[in-house]
Amino acid sequence: MMQPLLQIDSLECRYDTTVVTRDISFSLNKGDIACLLGPSGCGKTTLLRAIAGFEPVAIGEIRLEGEVLSSATHLTAPEQRQVGMVFQDYALFPHLSVADNVAFGVRRMPKAARHEKVAELLALVGLGHLGERFPHELSGGQQQRVALARALAPEPRILLLDEPFSNLDVELRRQLSQEVRRILKHLGISAVLVTHDQNEAFAMADQIGVIHAGHLQQWDTPFNLYHEPATRFVANFIGQGYFIPGTLADNESVSTELGVIRGNRAYPYEAGTPVDVLLRPDDLVLAEGEAETSDLKARVISATFAGTSTLYRLALPSGREVEAAFNSHHDYHPGEHVSLRIQADHLILFERLEENATLA
Ligand SMILES: Nc1ncnc2c1ncn2[C@@H]1O[C@H](COP(=O)(O)OP(=O)(O)OP(=O)(O)O)[C@@H](O)[C@H]1O
Image 1 (tube, rainbow, N blue to C red):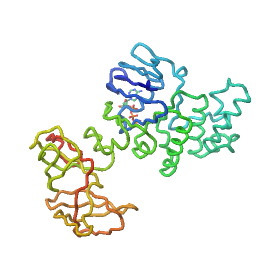
Image 2: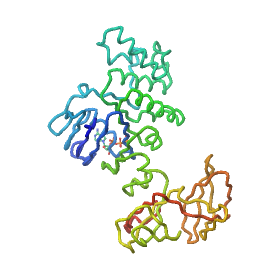
Image 3: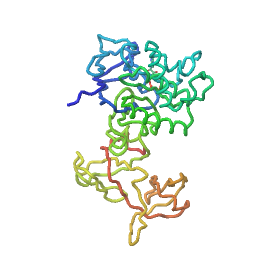
């Protein structure tokens, strides 16, 4: 089997005696882009800084191309790791021109080759015409492009990006995250990105690690995180969703106030087990096709127009409130009743724990 590019094994990082990341393991193949995603303070920046060599590790190992860079007894210096870094605040050298910033990491290269490299990278990040400017003469998005070109110039074995777009406005963030992905894929460079913005993670990453309180909850593709969350935390944190109570009818279906819902797998619980069933707003669909009937009716409480779809807050006959996203060609008003059916291709449920049996 191909050796992973980056391998993190049972990693624990601490500040003094406070444990910040616990038993984290994952690996990344060459050319793949990974994202560490989690709420503020969960330990993602610490993990990224440990990969860069800025933080020591207490337990476990970090290996790059099979070489141990960090362990409890060893720490390769950051500048010897051949790892590129892009920071949230760009961290450009203010007194150097754009071209000189990009050239900084390859200043020992022969002049002609260096010029060629800088020109090539500036063109790649769309700043071919701005090499003579100084950082303060650029917009935030342009500065981050320069920082990217500067980090790529020494041809790092892996690129690490710490919340690289969080100082930019939403639209620029979206554009730049897609563009950076395109550039990294074009060059075949692997990267690990830290963010707390799941849209950014979805747009950029082949693999996402969701971290909560120092624990890696799930390491998976964006699709699987959304459709196959491994823990309640991931189910709550990724996408919109809410739990409704149910009871396992047999090992493939669950009985709820919305009727018996059949899952797409055998669940590891016995019939009669109380469970919480995850429903996404797109799991509830209108039963309005020709000849379609449904006994399931809900009352519209509120509607939030969101362009292609409208998000409705609905009350079920029991009074329980749920959310559903319908195509915005429909226009229902508070007080109206709609017919529903469940269309959950990936039905996720967790055994009910009394203290957790609440709406997400
Ligand atoms: N230098 C430090 N000394 C002591 N504790 C620290 C230090 N840096 C971070 N911490 C603590 O370690 C925990 C994890 O911090 P970290 O910066 O890795 O989280 P994060 O997930 O990146 O958060 P954010 O998204 O807010 O940057 C936090 O509780 C933080 O207060």
